[in-house]
Length: 519
Figure 1 (cartoon, one colour):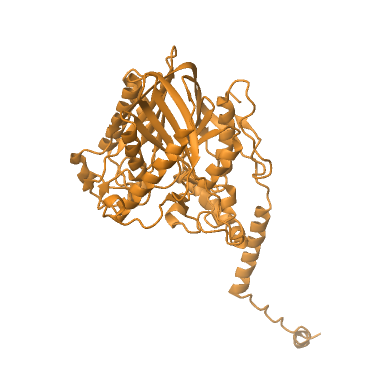
Figure 2: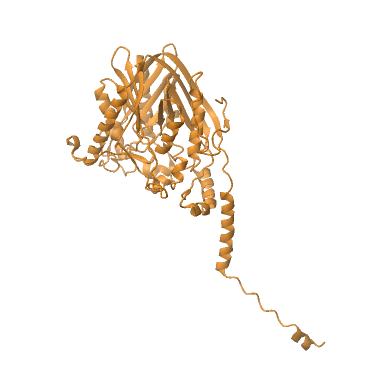
């Protein structure tokens, strides 16, 4: 066969049509979607609590108690270098002084003392509790066990947290002001210990109305808003020989009425106003406000508020009305109290390793299920980067039982819904939930049900959303630590403290608790 005929018999092959760019992108997206769906089907692993350190204190006997307070308003010479929270400096005045207030509890014959301290500041940074304990030890008070709680006033000073990414809202860190706060808190604790004397203690609670407002929209599917915990808890301590020593109030609502409305003047907001009212009603007593589960709710009051009590500034008039209303509810709680002259106290503070974050930058469930599935891969990557670059690896939780009342302290802005939930898990008459205690490493913490309503986005600011550091795992983690602590401090021979309904948070409780002294 000739060369020409071969060419005729074997025609040249036509080139394969080239795939377009959109086609290739579609294939990549399809693979991404399939991987995301596969990842979304992986069941959630049960949480474990790893206890790194544990401190316990137990005592019982005839009650001894003392209380004291110290002004923590920064001195005028510091004002130029300080600012109010989330405002540009400097501080320009004082609407009302802010305080550190301490209640010390002990028993005759025991060297141990438990001190609960209310600080009229925004948060408790992680370095504050160790610094106060170190200062007390330096003064020779080595048997005093301290709990710090921030009232979370948004009209208080910043500048006391050495936090690199918080400078935009906390202001530039001032070592001098931080040292000032530590010294004044230690002064209050020391004075309360020195004032201890035989005492009586009463515990009560009362429902409130119209004092707090839900900041979240309703569930977009059901139209239902999350339930709110409107209860106020009260502890009254009287001297055995007459007169009041302290009044402790536990209530959860953001003090944000005066935010950006004080003309750069410091204020303790409604917690400070309530404390002043109670101290006026009980001369010589110290009134501590312990901020509760304040996440997603804020303080409010009925209208009209204008010129209330002759106060011309509407924001300050509203704060006065809030304090007056709470004052009446506190009186209702006090009216039904039964007083005891003995104390049986058990307290446990644990340092725990934090779980891996699950930041959830997109809403969690309905009606954004597809968006959540598509966000799984970037969310995982961002969570790991955040964990490596900036998120804390450990924090402290605490529970204290005073006779038959249980106090749970959380290092975060705990959702009011989650606080409401926790109160119903504890099978005791008096349960106090304290957010903003001892640390702030967990940021905002929500109940799992709130993620079904779209995480923290509905009705809230992006600033709060990005402080939801650990995502949907943080709520169950707090429940699990509470379950552990409740059984550590429960009464001897008593029934189990925690009644956890199986199914609400699958795979989280009961489960492994790795601790040197498991309950």
